Image 1 (cartoon, rainbow, N blue to C red):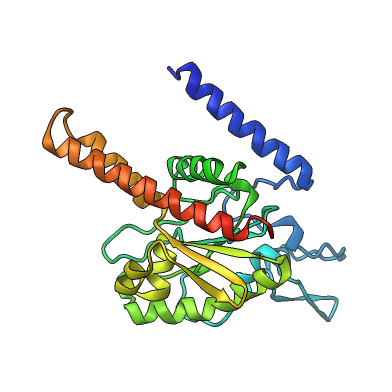
Image 2: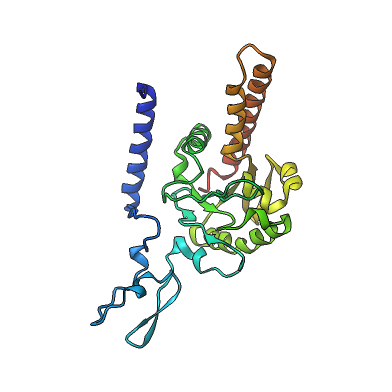
Length: 282
């Protein structure tokens, strides 16, 4: 049975999301996996209707009474029409989640480590892989910024899924470099003033060793746009899980607890410095 505090926290989160959606006047249409997005379908009446034309992917051409009609991709699905990485398996659906505060969080929910199961998010409202990761990140943003994590912009970086078992570090670096095109487009169109680069996205962008050196540091993505490199919520949760798995009053428990506190305090401190740098512009 769900205890009262947990229920109230979940209810509070639902109401915050609802308030945000009402202000944005943006209620996503939920649909089963595989169904086309209604906003990408060209509704033209024909005497002999061909249903196959309704299922064209965004950005593809469809034949209507002998005339080529190009269906423009939705802004949040522009990665579907991208051809920079021909070896991709698929584009990440809903790879951009828009907010109101001009901070862009770059992250990657796809799997990049060999011999690990693939992952693809299916919900348009899901940002990270698990609700636990979103809850943790939300608490940290609430603590340092004073508002919900949903106020930020989020973008998958890279914006497509690839075979983790057939990809080298150089492959990933090339893909992320290609994907800077989409990041720069978002920065320009949305007037982004600061960037948070998380976990896997940082590792793929800089390589494992360089990303570790840059962890917690702030660099310039472009002149005047600071970018802080942070641990992902999933990595922070791993330290939590290690402490929970250890038996209380053991050396392992004390060490895990100490490490968990160090990790969380470090990330909060880095978020605080980043907030001070961008708070007057977002």
